[in-house]
Structures are given as C-alpha cells and as structure tokens.
Image (cartoon, rainbow, N blue to C red; front, side, top):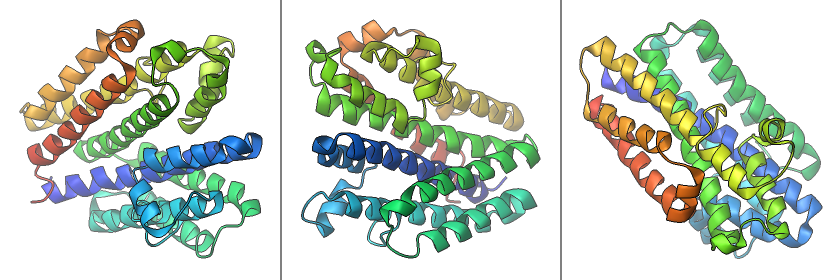
Length: 313
C-alpha cells in the first residue's frame, strides 16, 4: 500500500476520534457549568487546554465565556481544531483514499460531514446543544461501525485502527493531565471531598463513568480512577488498552510486510511500561510527570510510524 494511502487512513480516523472526544469534553463542561456555576470558567478553560486550542481562543476572545467557548470548539472558522474543521479534514482524507474504503465507510464519513455542516452552520443555541452533541457522537460511531462491519482485516484496517487508538489515548492523557495538574498539584490533596466532582468530570470526558461505577461500586476514589484510566485493559479508552491495540495492529503489519520497524520497538517499550507499573509507583513518580512523559513518547511514536510507513510519499 502507498504511504499516502496509509497516512490518509490513519489521519481520517484520528480526525473522527478527535471530533468525538471534543464533543464529549463539551458535554462534561456543560454539566459542570449547569451544576456548579462558580466553577464554570475554570472548567471551560481546562477544556480549551486539553484540546490544545487555548492560545487560538485567547487570540480572538478576551475572556472565558461558556457560549463562546462552545461555538469556538464546535464551529468557529478561526479554530482549526474545531469539530467541524476535524470532520472536514476526515472527509478530505477519506476522499483521497476513497478506493481503499468500502462504500459504507465512505458514505458514513460523508453523511457525518453533511449532517454536521448543516447543524453547525449557525451559532449554537444552548437548547440545541444536547441534540448536536448527540449527533456528533452518533455520526462518528456510524463511521467506526461501518469500518468494523465492512472492511477486510488487512493493512488498511490496521492503519485505521491505529489512528483511532492513537488519538483516543492522546485525548485521555491530556484530560487526565490538565485536570490533575490544575486541581491536584500535590499528592497530599488526593482524596479530598472537593476533588470528587472534578474526578467524576474526568470520567465523563472520557466516556467512562458507567464502566467505572460498575467495577468500583460507584465510589469516586482518585487513585482508583487514575488506575482505571491508565492501566486497566478492560476499559477501551484507557492508555494501556489503546496502546496494546496499537501494538497488535503494528504486529499485524510486521507479519504482512515481513519486517519489524523502529515503531514496533517503541510501542513495545510503552506497553512494557504499562504492564510493569502500578498506580502506587505512578503516583510516587508523579502523575503529571508520568503523563507528560507518556505524551512525549506517544508523539515520538506517531512521528516514527509516519517515517516507517512513508505517509508523505
């Protein structure tokens, strides 16, 4: 397969996953703003930081305003990381690699773009927001569903899955780091009553509330939540789960092409760290430091995958 095709597939799924992740963070922020208005500005600020668009927002707006943040994250043309911008990029990549996709996958991506283009064509009113966020989640799920249900399990599928899991892990790590770094700068503060709502928000932003509650009797314990999101391979959005899936897909590529590359060694090293770390060791080392190190290693892995499989050739 041509490197450009591999890159187009990888990034198409990254952009789709990024769109859904942003929608889920907005949903979590909206919940905080409606239930704890005093914390609303802080919540919207942390979401801008987690999505990596805070600098762009403040270059256009003087202060945090919930409605402005929502529109900025969903549709503002001055934000190249908005949901609409990411969906458009996903569609552009899908068009570029259309012959590598099934009809169902292409139609799911195109219908996602058409639906959201209509819904996000005008400023968002608060009463319309739940419907729009639901639509984003559903439409991106349709893309994943069509991928699972119709694509041959070959190298094209492997690059698609790697794009999904790479972006999902990156998002979970950024949410965890922003929340911990801002609200719990010292391990001495872990477990205080005032943290609980914010730790619940982390779970909501990563779509993990019900999964966590089903396994921990609904107790919002910061250390257990951190372990769940980092190390628990039962959770499809944990860092360990995502990276073991990437390891598997890279292994399939090695079998297909008859060659192991540098990216295979790098993903093995990251997975080894997850397999041989406990949450106590991570907290002792420093959760912020652990996540920062992970994000640096993840970024390096992404660049190495691009080089190994010649995405731009």
